[in-house]
Image (cartoon, rainbow, N blue to C red; front, top):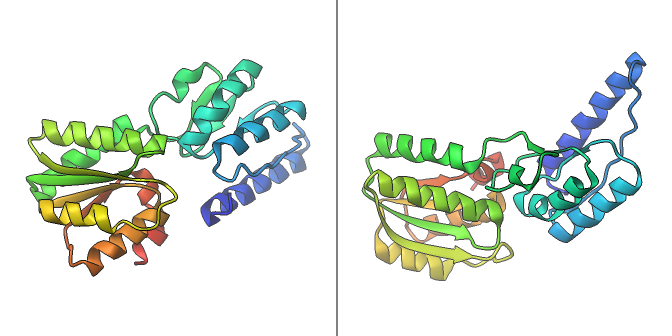
Length: 220
C-alpha cells in the first residue's frame, strides 16, 4: 500500500532482516509484495509468496484483505501475522492465522464506556463504511456497548469506502441532533467527514475506531 505508515512498516522490516542477517545465525530472504489494500490483490500476492516458498507471511494489513487471503494461507499451512487487522472472525479462519492488534470486540467497549463516563452523552449517531469488514465490526460493538450503557442511537448512516461526498448522511445526522457522532472509517474518509461536519456547524465530539487514529485525521 502507498500509505506512509505502511511504507514505514516495510522499512522497519527490511532493517530487522538486515540486522538478523548481519549476525549470520539465521539467514533470512525477504520478499516484499504490494497488495494495495485490495482483497483480490491480496489473494494474488499470497499465491505468489506461496510459489516463492515463503516460510511465513507478515500481513496483510486490512481486514478485508485478511478475510480474502487468510483461507489461502491456511490451506497452504503457512503462518501469517496479520497487521492492524481488527475485524471479528480473522483468527477463526484457522490455526495458521495470527494478528498483532486488539480486536474491535475488546477495544471498542472500553472506548465507549470511558467516553460515556467522561462526556456524559445521552444520544449518539453512527456513520460507517458498509463495505469494510473492520468498520462493520466496529459499528456493531459501538452500538451494542452504548445501548448497554443506556445511550440512545438516534441515527445510523452508511457510505461506501470509495465515496467522497457525505452531505446527505451528515444532514440526516444533524437533523437527529445527537450528542456525539461515531465515525467508523479509515483516516482518509474520517478526515473528510470531520471537515464537512465542521463546515456544516456540527460541533459534536467525534469518536472513532482504531483505524481513525492516524495523525493525518487530525490535520483538518
